[in-house]
Image 1 (cartoon, rainbow, N blue to C red):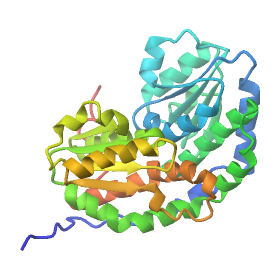
Image 2 (image 1 turned 180 degrees about the horizontal axis):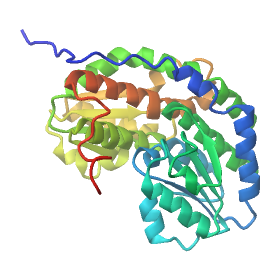
Image 3 (image 1 turned 180 degrees about the vertical axis):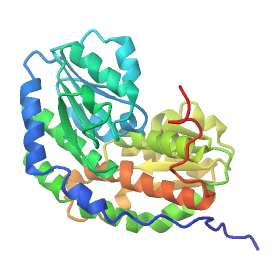
Image 4 (image 1 turned 45 degrees about the vertical axis):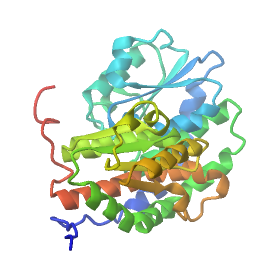
Length: 343
């Protein structure tokens, strides 16, 4: 009889602050702050919106980018250092920069914020720490308390930009849902917890794990593979867009490749389903986390894809990482190089 994999350290509890942090992510005061920035920054001549960050802060723009596809002004996401080194010609008074650094300690993002402001671009920084090195370079700062709250806050910023361009008739409905969606975050983790435990148990000892997602969840796949598995668990992982998986990476499938597929309810869902159809035919180690299975209490049908992406990109992936931590025994707070050596 095969042995059932057991955790080697206690599973971290779901944070008591999860709901409270989300509840205050888009208060009327924060909404007024975001609206004031957008009214000041957006002009008839604005040509581009830059979304700038590093690592998880860059990847977690995924859901916000998807909302902004309704914008007549294109939104471009760039690594903070690359943004500065490339020096895009559109950067200046006729652009808007939304910068993100969760804890505010990323030197590259601090340099990019300074660079953008010196070019004359209005910059809004999204962060937790108003005293951080990144915050010291910013004039306009909007604060959040957690990665879950940041997702909701970035949704508000996206909708504010859309409304200012006259393409957000559903602005009031969306903001009302954002203000009342904390139960959706907590409930989703509870509903998926056993499934997430099983995924971690099945994958923790594998030499490499593939993580797939499409649309607003492609960034979530990148966050989980690069930040949680590679950075925090020193584990080989590959993040691939669900569509692009079928244009190269699927050739590694031999029936025993561990694959985690994030499946959302947005317009790219058929892409993920096509990939799943392939995997179900040729592979036997498939683990699907399907946003359509979530109850998302208080979220109307027309906003399930948006809020579901927020939840999957933050609370769900974070909880899956905690299960990996419990089975591997390696704390998510450990690093080999980050914050320890010059790089």
